Length: 168
Image (cartoon, rainbow, N blue to C red; front, side, top):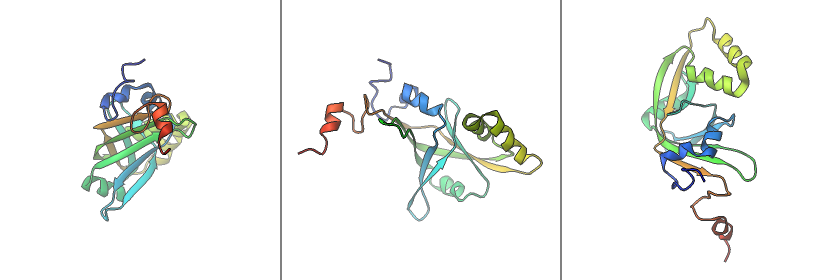
């Protein structure tokens, strides 16, 4: 049993849970959820890079989500597998949006993790000689949840408790 196994959902130390670490190092897309100015939710699948402290998303200047995130910085993020049972990392907290001239280092690092050195080099070559502006969206989670559907379930409890839900 790891030191993080018994932590309650919401505890930021769950970032050290083996499922969280595996997902943060994976090539699964993160889904970034935020609220737009018209009060409707938006969810975007995005590449990400984990620095050890922050989950970082990058986008090009001019993307509408940049101003939305500056106005309403609270987000929710999920990184999950499609396997059965699924493994899920849930994150919440405010983001910080920073303008970057040129390719953001985390953007290149994400491309390297997702597609290897060839993809990293291709992305860098595509930007070469161009004036590129990006936004770096950094999330330092204030709430972390881990679900693996074998030891950690939505709402807590045991596998039997989870299986009994919805039965009369």
